Every structure is written in structure tokens, then in C-alpha cells.
Image (cartoon, rainbow, N blue to C red):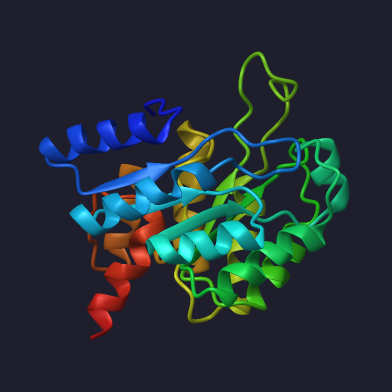
Length: 253
């Protein structure tokens, strides 16, 4: 990730990237204490860039308010990614926000209201490895019209309060995927890049295929071999998995 603290710096960075062949960008950033990401001052620049280059623009937004939703609609962003949490304790304990699941659902409402392509994420095991609220998050998402759903899993990181946390088991992740497949039968479901590595990853990849995912980010060789053995036609892309819905839509035509 490259820092761009001002709209001018962002425009200079993107101009440089495009000159080197860049076809898309991810806009992210740290959130405020209310769970929003300070993006509004960058909207005019993003709109200008989108019109000039027709880049794919994917954004991590945090919680959405009406001003941001209307602005994102003006830009014509290709996908908005945000975590959806289905448990109030997890929101307070892990994200340290004085918010509720209703605030997260309101973000989905606004994205739908403004016809902004949404790709919500669910972090399995977010509450210190426990499965708390993930199924409710799926239920919340299923009320709306996401372009895709990305399932990821807690990755305990060193020097953080969760460094000694045991991540959710592959079977637990697969259970959430299976439930999502039932609740969102026509929505592309992706196993995202954030998930434990090694043998855990191999097991998760194979179980995810059994559970009905449409795609896997950075799939293990064992996962790819299993999918091929089961008769799936494999396609590989080098763009963000949040945009896979565009590939699937193109194939359906």
C-alpha cells in the first residue's frame, strides 16, 4: 500500500501507476473512532481519475453514511468492501466501536439504495477465534443485493492481543460458507486471501470447494488439484477477488 494523505498525492500516485500499466486500484485507510474511513475529501479526485482512465476502483469504506454513499455513487466505484459483524459484543470488544449490528446493516441498506456494487466480508472467528454472530451476519447480508460475498478467517498476528488465539478450524469456516451458499444461492461466494496458512489453508481450500464457493484467492496447489479432479474448470485472474462477480457475469452472457 502507498500512502496518499492528500488528494493531490493520490492523483500523482495514480497517474504514475497508470503510466506503468495499472488497470485498477484499491483505496483503503484507517478508520475513525466511529468506524468510518475519511474518504470524502478524495471523492473529486477519484471521480476525475475514473473519468480519465476508467480504472477499476475498489474501496474499503468502513461504515457507510448517506454523504459517503451518494459520493461513491457519483464516482461510479466498481466495488465497496466492508466487514459485516453480526454480534454486538464483537463490535465492542474487537473493533472497539460504540455501534451495533444495526449500524452495519444500515451500511448495506445505503449501498443498495444508491446502487453501489457491494462485496461484504465476513471474518470467521473474529471474536478471538470464537464463532459468534457469523451466521447472523450472513442473514443480514442476505436481505440485500451484494454483488459477491467474501469469507475470510481470523489470522492471529504477532504483537497483537490475539497473537495466542487459536484460529477457527477449517470445518467451522466451511460451515459458514455452506450456510452462505444456502442463504445466497445466486450470489458469488469467495474464500478470500486472509486465512491461516500451511496445512490449515489446504484443508480450508478443499472444504470450501465442497461447500460451494465460486472462487478462492491464492488457492493452494492441493486445492486446485482437488477442484480439477472433481471436474471443475479452473480460471485464474490477477485482480482483486472482490471483482470476480464481473467475470461470472461475463461468462453468463
